[in-house]
Image (tube, rainbow, N blue to C red; front, side, top):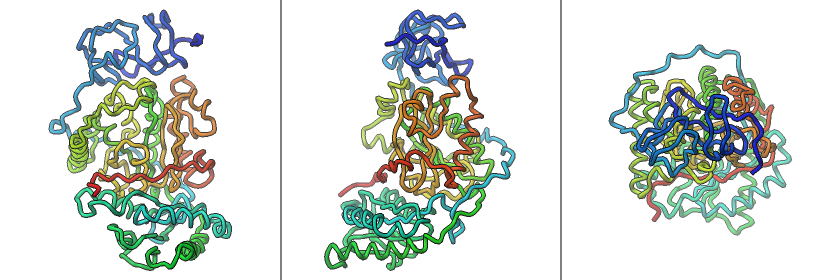
Length: 508
């Protein structure tokens, strides 16, 4: 390990904290002396915690002003607070939470901001001009992929105003308990994605003909003119020709769409984190939280998600619920997921991932406290069950698993036009249906992935910028990307992940 010659720095977040994370790239060696007089008793990696005081066995370990665990044995001041030394505390009891007793006052409206979007006949707006082709069952995915390849090569060039053709492939539709209560989640997810505002009101569904998820459930009013059923076609070439002809009709209409000035209130912005590290809750997530507050003030709908990365910080969120109904709905989503994990004989220790731990996150409690910083400080006005459409302006909790791909798919079903994705370890994640703005928590990641990271929040840790500075930068980036004035790196490279449905119902 090369010696770090920078001035030694650590980040302590509140006066209550008895640990701090090392801010120097490469970490700091044994004997490092900080200006405050703290001396490290051993090497501590970047992002990992050093004890600021002597901690006795069973003494609370505090970060973010909250207990993230208890000392498994005595920990000396200046030593590395490793995962093995921390006993995870229990999650907040759902029946003991305060609800709607600390609702933030509405902030002053933020006026004068717009974006250039595609206006739809139903009053919604899009940030992209796409033809989406939905599958009703996984059986037809190979045929659709073949057809989409032909469409992109032979037809799409004739319609330069259309950004892309997107196949909505998934692993659902048959071999499933279609009438099970939890089947509502994957079904409404596919239904809502098929009518996403970036598709301009054009619907095209490719089905097989014998699937349980009948294609008419995915078209407006159950009509059949938007459906290609492969079992009704004579031969493979006729299947492809039918899809291409129906696609061309819709591409011709989509090509007439033009960007027009739209209010920020037309936007639905999703927030997510992945490949998180100990800097996530210090730099990128608080900056995104600040941008979230700006978006809410400008009238937008903002989604934050990831139940397992909210559960251990839920006591900090229910007081912000706009009313008791919203608070109780938030609790019920936590309770549902507690039961879901229990049925699968899983627990919260499955999160964080090995990469998160390498980045300094000890347990899911610490991860949750950093994750909820994305929600900013606005009142929580609504709670969405997985895959449910957003209907209220302001800050919404959209319940999803923490999995990047599943969360992204469910936020798309909720109507998300654009997602902001924070990362400390790095991920090339992207979505074809909506742009993804990736935000780095560290300068080093931005330098390493200079052609994948869109916005750098690492400057907050080094003191080059404030949370407010990066928050405003993100706000403007969001409007520029939504307007087509700026392209994300994921879209530039065409890096897009598969859709991944959340299906807690039985597979038969």
